[in-house]
Image (cartoon, rainbow, N blue to C red; front, side):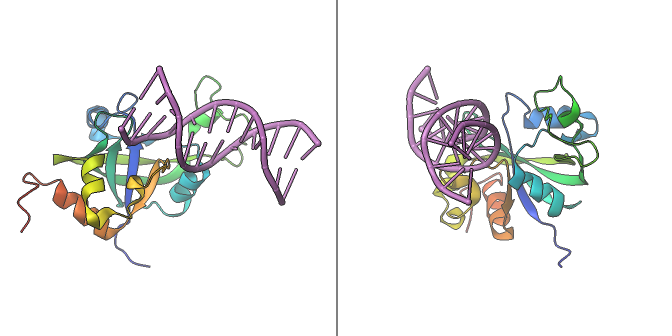
Length: 164
DNA sequence: GCCAACGTTGGC
DNA sequence: GCCAACGTTGGC
């Protein structure tokens, strides 16, 4: 039971919600709603804690990659979009007395000085087992190890080749 | 726009 | 409870 923050990677399609969109939100924070995958839901419910650190990843982007760092500001609570028939994430089978889907709040910390593309991630031997570089990995919230976190931050520094 | 890989659904 | 069909994700 360490007090160390956990590390995560969240994917967002910039056409739907980009890093810039997050930074434009009041307080540079938002509700991370619309998650409709049980594995991701379980991470939200069980593991994502206030203060955890997040890599903000643009998927379906040219190029795809990590643009910035965010932080968990509020832990799991029910996602209201599941009860809204007008919403694209509506789930008729979810019981308001026992909501099936959860969300959390995150806030932008800072952009990476150097965008770290998916290609960069794949090139880094230290990241060979990172979830996001695995073929066919579609999970939109992924755990990141502290080693991977440190490596990505290093790659995201202003002079990526200056590593000694 | 293509399509491989994956998660979910539903018939049986 | 199996598994084929389907819809979605997301890199390319």
